[in-house]
Image (cartoon, rainbow, N blue to C red):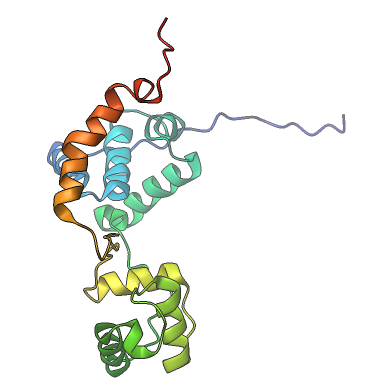
Length: 197
């Protein structure tokens, strides 16, 4: 040893002290956020409430199933910014690169249908819409992002239902009511086999 004395002090847990009215307000906000589907905000608020009850960040990490570093960051943010530091921030992400006019043009293209646009199918898919956006406006979009854009612009996902063009509805109904149940009851009997013995 070189004669250096190292004192190991245990780390003191960060425990917040909340006024009873603040405690009740944060607990109420946590429940409201949970009800509204803001689960991340509810988890942060709950971490502050539970910490004020004496739970350490390690215990909170286990209880809330979150990394301890995140829990510590939440508590630090609450100490520095108050409850405002726990709300969801604006997640900017990549901005939409289509102008209002281009969005309107795209809406008109989509409303007219893929066949009118010159495609050989009557169904818009996310990859096809991404291709149209790139062809018309020179902007590349991932098909997953296209789905989000379409939803934000008021379009909905619709799946085609396969219906035979020349189907006889009466014959189909008779088959569903008579023939199919008979097949389900004794498929082997119609073949002349006796496998139940």
